[in-house]
Amino acid sequence: MILKSGYLLHHLQKKYYPYSIEKVNISHKWDILKLQQEIIHTLPSKDIYYPLTEEELDDIFNGQGLILGVFVENTLIGVRVVSYWDEETKNLGRLVGIKDNELNQLVFFEATIILKPYQGNKLQKLMIDLASKEIKKLNTFKYFISTVSPFNYASLKSLLNTGFYIRKLVWIYENTPRYILFKRYDQEKIFHDENFQSNKRFLIDDFSSQRLHFDKGYRGINLIKKQHASILEMIL
Ligand SMILES: CC(C)(COP(=O)(O)OP(=O)(O)OC[C@H]1O[C@@H](n2cnc3c(N)ncnc32)[C@H](O)[C@@H]1OP(=O)(O)O)[C@@H](O)C(=O)NCCC(=O)NCCS
Image 1 (tube, rainbow, N blue to C red):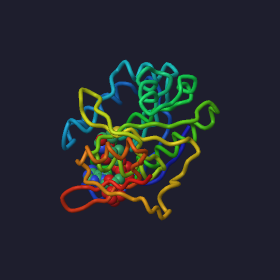
Image 2 (image 1 turned 60 degrees about the vertical axis):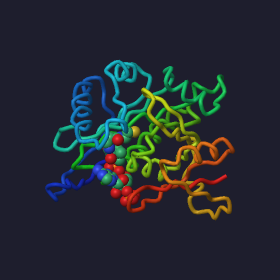
Image 3 (image 1 turned 30 degrees about the vertical axis):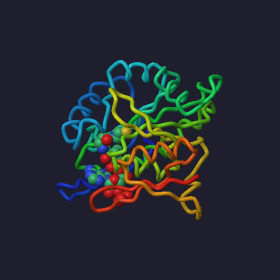
Image 4 (image 1 turned 90 degrees about the horizontal axis):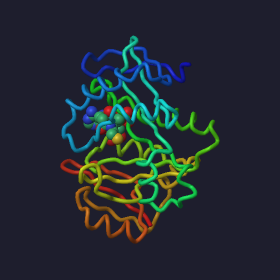
């Protein structure tokens, strides 16, 4: 079933192509792994994306998650991967203080990957919105969680735009820094338009100041792009 269709700009060819988004199944597993390989080669740094494994995809297709695919002319050009009930999701939940009896209500928005020439079309936000709608239909989940590298501007920016906020900074995935982002399933950009007096701004790589403030209960809510670095805005 097609969840959404429209036109996408191919940035190199400066041409629009028709696309469709639908749920994918195990028959797409190798296409997903191939797409992931292609995208990894175009990343500015290998540290900003921790690849999905074949086993993870098998678990998801066996009922522990959901994957949406974007197709252009029958070719997969992007996916959004969501998982639940697996140990990784539960461990992340524990890190942000979800109680044991609620860990089964947690959904891990694991990754969006989009082929480079189609990046910048706001597909990640669209896929998060579509995946959220599918998840809400299950009537089982209460919390959404995600992890993103502080240096992955595109991913952070689009997650913050869908109502996620940053709750913590940790070192995971072979000791690389990751923000843990969080939102309640029904939360929509609740922080963005309000005037908080306690705003603090830190350079994106000023991890010690950020951690100090996360420990005091501050949340990261916005990313401001400057010429040489990004700035994280935090509120209490
Ligand atoms: C991260 C990713 C999914 C973002 O998806 P997207 O839908 O293309 O992003 P958006 O169109 O919403 O853009 C978000 C912001 O990033 C910028 N951006 C998007 N693609 C970009 C690119 N290739 N290079 C630089 N900036 C980019 C946009 O200009 C926008 O910034 P702005 O709001 O300041 O204008 C996509 O870039 C991607 O697949 N990256 C490689 C894999 C990856 O890192 N995945 C995330 C792991 S969790």
